[in-house]
Amino acid sequence: VGEGGEGGETTTEEAGAPVEIAVVGDVTSQGAAEGIARVFGGLSGRADPARSVSAVGPAARRAHPGAGPQGPTPTRVVVTGGGAGAAIGGLGPDVADLEALRVGFVAARAIGRRLDAALRGHMPGAGARVEAFVAPSQVRRGLGAMVVQGALAQGSWAGAQRAHSALVRELLRIAQDGLGADEVAGATAAAAQDAAQRLGSRVYWASVLATSALYGHDPEDLARAQGAYRAITPDQVNRRLREWLRPGSLGGVIYGPAAETGAAVGGGV
Image 1 (cartoon, rainbow, N blue to C red):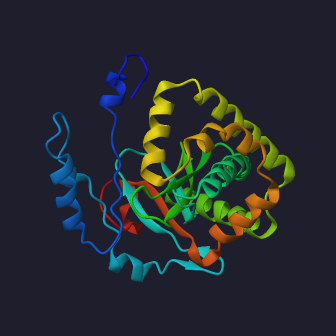
Image 2 (image 1 turned 30 degrees about the vertical axis):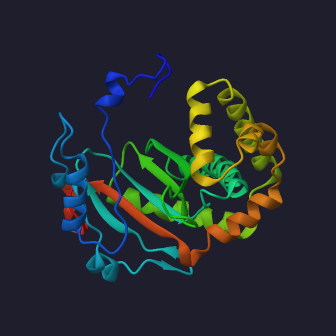
């Protein structure tokens, strides 16, 4: 939603963009596909959602047992659009905990910068890039995630595995040793600057009022975001990261081209 009109507007590019949906829980892949189809199947101009479902079910979990003391064993997922990469997820902030959310946003900025530089150095020529973000559940209190994604413009399954290993090593190092004061200072400054810019947005204030009503936040606390970000300390960030990035709580996925399906688990995405 843009800010071009009183009620906002949707551009053609946004309207035609793909939507990625994750269904997590005690549900079969068929049940997930049917639920997605019920909600989104009536949208005009969309492909059949059920054709794009990739299942990571109990069989895959048995083959790839998940997190151990050295981090997660990744599940493999085939992609049809080309490219390769890896994603690692850990615990993250609760949407109702404003302090944890802000610390999470700052931590994700700093982690993304460090891991982007680390992966580019580890895999020169692969067109590597890394982003990190927090994804608090919008419907379940106490549930959130921090996700790191490493994408390779020139990649393969072997490259995706290398990227996953490099990212996990760096995440575990961060969990143990913490982020540096300079890294946190740079991330808090950037977050504060973004917050200051959002204060002039009508769309932002509409979101603030809705969020306040839904999650019980004080709108004045949200309006003071700029100062709150600048007050975040390295100790706050690293204490949360030790909680969120425990080796046993990490999960991993690598993805690669359909041409190499021999080593892959799952269907097309």
